Length: 153
Figure (cartoon, rainbow, N blue to C red):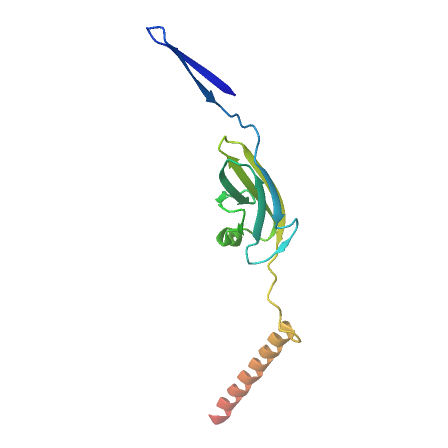
């Protein structure tokens, strides 16, 4: 849109100036390339890759399960490790936001699965059985020691 401003001085001289104004009503468009839907993730925070279509980006942010937003600058990176560690296991919703200079907000959402496996058990051993055997052994050793002290006195 072009606005024309006119001015007239006391001598009758007329002047004008054109000003062009751009009206931006289109929100940024975000495409998430990675992570992928329901991607299985572990202890290490996942990386991300986005395509953001908007010539006038002001701010880029993401949130994990609706927690406070974390700013990022490039369209590829890694989720903040501290924020990832503080997020409990299970489904995690990552929401990416882009805000343009006109205040239009675009967003895209992806859900990943955070699953931290338990450390492997000692193969071939039954922990309950080992505890039982050790308990019996301690009782037998204790009785033998008591019997020795009785026979010496």
